[in-house]
Image (cartoon, rainbow, N blue to C red; front, side):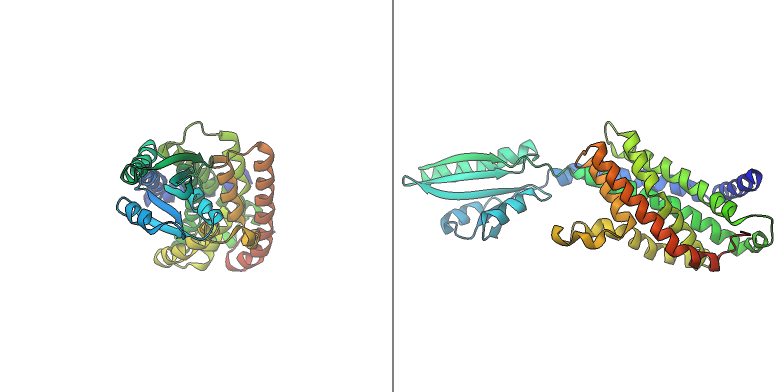
Length: 338
């Protein structure tokens, strides 16, 4: 049994080396991480904008608009929500106190130093023109942590690459017509699944940590990252088998990969679009829990208890997904004898 598994793993490795697939797979997360790292400072130090209430005096609005873009909100609650979102949006609430204007600047708490000083300078310039005003600074104390979100996306994408390699190796055997030989060989179904999975699993684990290191994530909690990654690897394997089963050649495989990658990453993207009250509609999707796990590590810096619960849900949804898809894959690929 072990010899047959090793033989298939070795063949997958040799195919990847021969076609330079392994090189591309290793370079992909590194290049993505470098691009993210290059643009992160630009995103974090982007130009400020002001969030103000609809009833703000028009003369003040005209002054503010000379220095930054302005967004209007009906309530303070909506204004605070905007300040807490990604980006350097500064809230400005103007009120009257004893005949003078009082400017209250509302910061999220993680803005760049230049953004804070620039906002203060703008208000000070306005108050000097008006001759009677005072300024109050308020810090909401919530961190958006852009690099943390990028790390979560990068880790999830690295897992996808491992599944891609499984699928491309299966497609390669289809093109060479060697996959039929497996159907009549002594290879058992469990051996086929294990052998095909090993290469993609180890590659995913390596790429996750390499990508995070290149991105510049400091003090990586290795055990937590390993736990969340392992909990979600079943779907990575399923993605690879599904890609290999529905694709007859490499060109067809690349086309299916584009669609599959979008489906794989879509739950993570939807977490930023769907209101929190309706986020439960994503609970049945395995990659939602994987992304939430990475977010808990890199953005929220949650405890092991919280990360453990997310990892458990990730594992359960992965198992359910495997049970649903296994019968379909069994028909499309020669998994060997029972």
